[in-house]
Amino acid sequence: MSILEVKNITYVYGEGTPFRIEALKNISVTFEKGELIAVIGHTGSGKSTLLMHLNGLLKPTAGKVLYEGKDIWESKKSVKQARFNVGYCFQYPEHQLFESSVQRDIAFGPRNMGLSEEEINLRVQEATQFAGIDSSLLQKSPFELSGGEKRRVAIAGVMAMKPGVLILDEPTAGLDPKGKNAVIELIKNYNIQTGSTVIFVSHNMDDVASLADRVLILSEGQIVMYDTAKNVFSRGKQLASLALGVPEITQLFLSMGERGFDLPVDIFDIEEAKAALLSLLRRQAHD
Amino acid sequence: MEKDVIIKFDRVSYSYEEGGDYAVNDVNLDIYKGEFTAVLGHNGSGKSTLAKLTNALLLPVAGSVFVRGMDTAREEFETQIRQSVGMVFQNPDNQIVSTIVEDDVAFGPENLGVPPEEIRRRVDDALKTVGMYEYKGHEPHRLSGGQKQRVAIAGVIAMRTECIVFDEPTAMLDPKGRQEVFRAIKSLNKDFNITVILITHFMDEAVFADRVIVMDDGYVRLDGSPREVFKRVKSLRDMGLDVPKPLQLALLLKKEGIDLGDEILTNEDFIKEFLNYSGRNNVNT
View 1 (cartoon, chains in turn orange, cyan):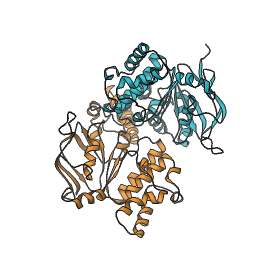
View 2: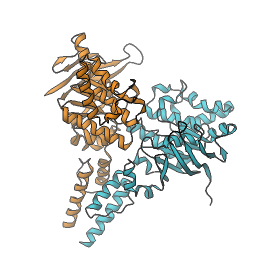
View 3: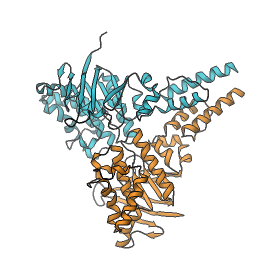
View 4: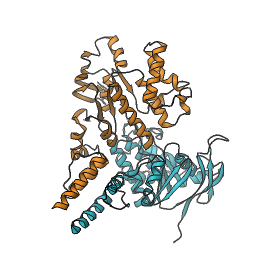
């Protein structure tokens, strides 16, 4: 079942100026309920522009955005509702922490939705659990936390609004391997346990490979691929031509393929890689 | 031949608050001319603090840092030290000061009082070195992240520093920008003999260094060639760090009785060892 549908949207920056850019060119795409979708593309491909349309931060120059079948631009009220239905977590969200305690920061979104104190507390608790934030941190100032913890608090703040669709712009950027893994686990758990759709932007193909059900690739304002992660990464050469890179393991297998090793091209997981190499050695032994 | 020491850490400690925990703890370190050193460590391990101590952006609370023999704690050396050791930070947007690329690159040498014709020459050379010469008349804010970061690097090169410290210079870039900037850094070291200290989270960048330093809790825990350091898989994982993917795969295969050795850092190493192994294997069977 689809939850969010983008129909023939075009978006123009700087209309009527010499800097006019068509950032999105007649794009149509459907996001299914409960899926974990990665959006990739190099800087300037239109990723952020597309995502900002999904909760009404930008209004399409032409075309429509439908949430559960209804045009989000139908009325003032529906646009406001779209902001709650589709939660948006910006890049480096920890820069936007501002409250005096972690608890208050996570509660900020739900409070804006006009929920009861009781419901707010419940949601803060839930989001804290997802984010793996120790409850002893709740009364601390967010500024006393480590970089990885701050990032998780900021994400928890958006999750606490229980959006039907959660958008994350580069959720793991700038984190160390440990912080990165914690954020990946957090996103996975949230997706599985709430059944909410998650759309995230990443430049890290290994993160994409380990998280995404489906991958959407944008280039110059147009969709070039929208397929399962396996199918997308099996087209490694095309990805390289878009200057996007492939997961490290896929790169290794592509290089081995060029040297004449008979290996599958759709491998991006290290365990799968091991299995494929073991099977290759067995085949060689039989020859 | 005796190695030429550029930066010397002599029992250096630093803490951000008086009486607080040490962000850098009793560090002894010699950085040699022409060396490419990668510094790894999880967030909060002290690696950025270490970087800022190299050119007097921070001063030790105990011990001393010497740049070319000059104590960084002595104010009269500050200009000379900054001329010797430059820094490039993570966010390119925070490092651009002018509205035209070449003006931005000229900013450093102008402040040093370099004569105009010499500045002209240095700016052109620096922009050529990082492959940004054709953008010299552009507005920096219209450039991509990778391009901006290369302009920032050119600004440091134009000051003729012999050592550049990079604090996670590729963390905010897309894969293309990352590749451009990393290629520029490698070239500075190999082609122009500039000493490089690279602070990074990316293991695939660290494997190209001559030397890898791993920090944890403010201490230098490991210090050696990439091969020596990445062999210490367990210590690295205990410190919240990864090992390079090709080595991870080799270790998994080893558990299955396929021993490719533990000298694998890059894809090329992996392929070579795998070829060797399957060659041996075929002869045996």
